[in-house]
Length: 412
Image (cartoon, rainbow, N blue to C red):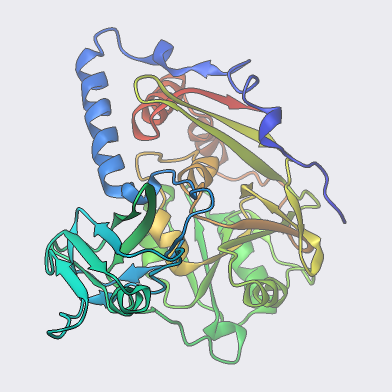
């Protein structure tokens, strides 16, 4: 299976808004204070997620300055040598270079008396090194260290490196290292995967699902929750992966959880891997434009859009979202979470919230069956709750407007 459709950014900039729901149209009449709160929340979000490392930098043309282009990372408030600093210049009687930062201080070796090197600003934010010897100057540049002066777990700085009319700016990543959180995957499927589902007024269907699971996986752990309690259900998972299923699914001989685990283990960048339900391999792409700070962005959930086949697994494709039958990395899904404000219909919204955070794919070689519609004492009552009311639909659009800072949304 190759690519069904290649999605290019040039396809969408002028099309997302066409046919979209304009979310300002569903706001309550007096929404001035809400707009102010949304604008404030956006600024706080940007303060948490953006830094000077987002600044666009350009390499100087034919510069004699040598410096690290990327990858220079330091721990907060910890002296770290800046790798690769050097000057490559033609013969001169004197050489003067300077380094300047804003979130830390710079230090180098104090030269011994008699050495033709002058250092100014040692231990300050601007360091100047002057010498008649290019070799001696480069020896001191090799000893320059950077220390951030304010504790922050993930931020950055920009260093300005100057010589005569030449200037280069390079990024410094300031990050507290994170210890890995690893799962002992064990040797069998029961230690690798937990099955999770939600249910409400469909207990005969749930019992049929459980019976089918036990036919193929007699010892696997199963956690059951109400829809709005999905976070609680997933919080109880202790295995590396969980398999999400609906309460009216049925396991068959084609429901091979091991095959999904095999793909996830082989492609560790993946966070979510979907399968087929009743022969339907539903998936979708999400196209998102950030828009401006005042009005917000636009989001387009496009059915059947796929980006490319998964390398090494032609039966799988990379997508933005999948059907309600998927294997997920427990820690990755917990970081995104299921919004408890959406009590019933909220499948796509999980992947909207996880856009840019979750790497998602869909595979056609693992499937689950769908139960025939059962009739029992709770069927009629369940149907009354199944379809969202108009007011619930409006509330969901208002939630997207504020939480996701959107001005329009489109489903296709």
